[in-house]
Amino acid sequence: MRTWLTNSSDYVIATFRIVIGFLFLCHGTTSLWAWPAEPYGGNTAELGAWPGWWGAVIQVVCGAALVVGFGTRLAAFLGSGSMAYAYFWSHQADGALPIQNDGESAALFCWAMFVLIFIGSGALSVDRILERRRRPAAESAPSPSGDVELVDA
Image (spheres, rainbow, N blue to C red):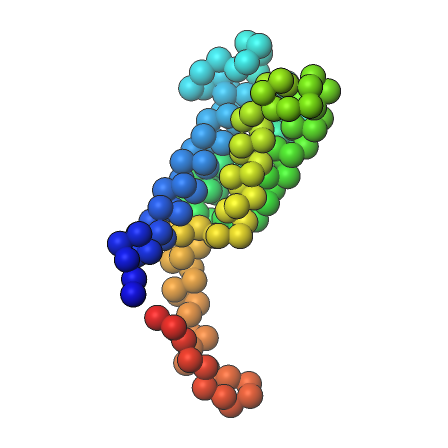
C-alpha cells in the first residue's frame, strides 16, 4: 500500500537536490563574483588560482547542474569530492571536528551530495526527461535473451 509519503518522495528528493544545488551555486558565485554576497574574507578568488578559483568553478557548474537536474549523479560526485578535498585541505588542520574548524558547510555539502549520487535526481529534472525519451525505444526492442521482463509500475 502506497502512502502519501511514498507518493511524494520523488518530489521531496527533487526539492532536496534543487536546494542543495542552489546553495552550492551561491557559494561559487560568491567566490568568483562576490554575488549575491561578499565572500568570506572579502576577496574573490583570483583567476586560475588553485584551489580557490577551481573550487568555485566546480561549485558554479555542479550547482547549476544540480538545480536543473542534468547529470545529477556526476555533478553530485564531483561536488562531493571537491567538498571533501576542501574540508581536509583547508579545515582539518584547525581542529578535529567541523564545529572546531569552521568546516560545517564543507562537511554538509559533501555528505548531501554523496547521498544524491545514490538517490539520483528525483522528479522535475532534465535527467528524468531524457530518461523518458530513451525508455520507449528500449521498451519496444526485444530483449537479447527473448525473455519478457516484468516492470513494477
